[in-house]
Image (cartoon, rainbow, N blue to C red; front, side):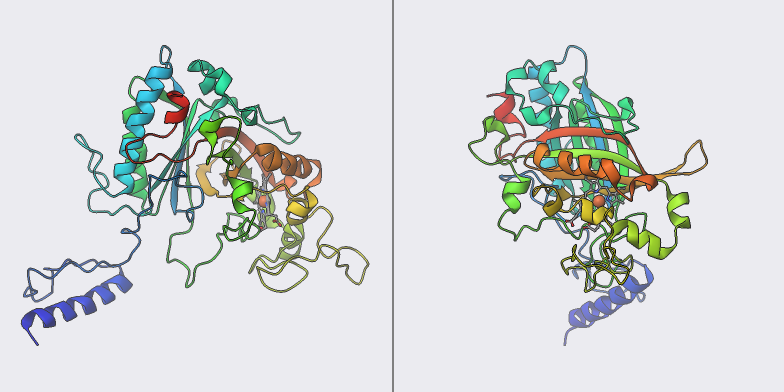
Length: 409
Ligand SMILES: C=CC1=C(C)c2cc3[nH]c(cc4nc(cc5[nH]c(cc1n2)c(C)c5CCC(=O)O)C(CCC(=O)O)=C4C)c(C)c3C=C
Ligand SMILES: [Fe+2]
């Protein structure tokens, strides 16, 4: 056994202990100072080294696992910026996103905020809002799917935090990596576009639970169980726009509905557990339906209790939103939680940055929200405060940029 072998083993042991206590030691940082200079640093976790691909048939950030940190940002083109400036911006942004997602520096002038970190599952996703098409004289290329969402009776929307010409979704498992991407793209918007609104969100950190689990939201519920699964035969059809679509530039793309949904947590948290569970129709502890089994057991919507009433209440959120109650309408929900402190009324300004993905909002979000709007037991505890609908084109190939087929078509 050589000295190198010994030092390598000791370092591995040290790194294991350091991982448990939160200490970080480099390869040459052994306590005795005799560790071999050529011993590679031992990564404490794989969180930083995980990378998603920017180039491909689909944009990242749609089917990728939810990251721990997110930024949703809408931009408006500046006065005087049209199709040419928008195309140059999308080219710049795509190049930067591809570099950052690979864990590379943005280029000259990189701020250094993400130095030392790996790609950390960074994804950057770009979308176009309805107003983008008039501003770029591309109105004929605008799909009907971008028609304004209907007004819902429970809407309390803030126009200043809704819509926008361009939308960027950033997600990463490291807060600095996410911020670095946000700042880099904001700066690169330059004279072409300015921020209209920004929302910052979070999810559980990878590794916080002993095994991979469905996310929890700030009401404490397991949230995401009923999502369409990539293994299901109709997944693609539900989430992605098919080839042969009227507007070919959207083939392989998806429509994102974004809602900032405030949770009225002071009211919710006063509700006893059994009533919280009745509101959703699932157990809070493990997300299992109230009709029994585990999280993945199908709810029995016909089951009645000893009192003759449905076990999953007629107005339970999970019943009303289920595809079988909505002519098959389904969407892929991929939200972030948010917490922006205490609002002027003294209640938490916290809730869900609800992002859902579908091939067509009229076969996803719209019919489900219409139904929820008419009588969801969750409604008294939430408030929709902002809204956006964005066309998210398919992914860019190597050397291409997102939206090229639209902007150069
Ligand atoms: C219009 C779409 C939806 C909005 C808006 C929405 C808001 C919202 N939902 C929760 C919590 C849960 N939702 C759950 C299920 C669920 N919700 C929707 C749609 C919207 N939710 C769907 C399509 C489904 C799946 C139904 C099914 O397939 O059976 C659940 C149960 C667990 C799960 O399946 O994810 C929870 C919990 C909150 C807190 C919220 C607004 C803040
Ligand atoms: Fe829901």
